[in-house]
Image: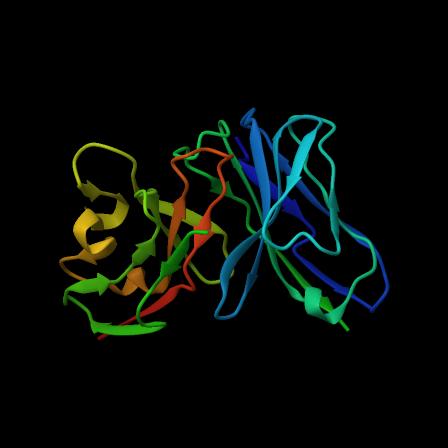
Length: 114
Length: 115
């Protein structure tokens, strides 16, 4: 199993550009989520999904969109990038929505917005 | 809303010394508790978690943590530090009441191990 994979590893955008961060898992996990990591702030939840076709907002959803058309994929879209979105983005998945389940993290995407 | 406090953003220990990383949570109902480790330029990896039962939890790489309800704490320890333990460590919690598997993280502790 590849686990949780993310592409690209690095990306530089200009303010106002849009892009999609890709996330895929091959573990047939029901639950997937996106976090951003900023220095001194830990990780914060952006959006999550409890199954195909079902998504919801986390702590910091503004400026981001998600969809979940398949169990495997959970892309994160930046509609109009802003410098405040410069961060490292992690995708995670767990077997179910049960809050004791272990979440498995991808390697991250480092995004810089100029 | 839940919150997690990790005291000490940087901790330095000598190789072979005890490692103690502190974590306190604030919620009226004890949450599920997790410790994750992040090596440079990598994702997070679960070290251990407490869900129910025995309050002393053993994890990978010789780490363990003890849930103390009276102190609202879940401190991470390792008896003897190794150079390979140098990494950033995150304490995280999730709500027992449900609402999805949403983790709230502390701000992290960078562990440095010196010869």
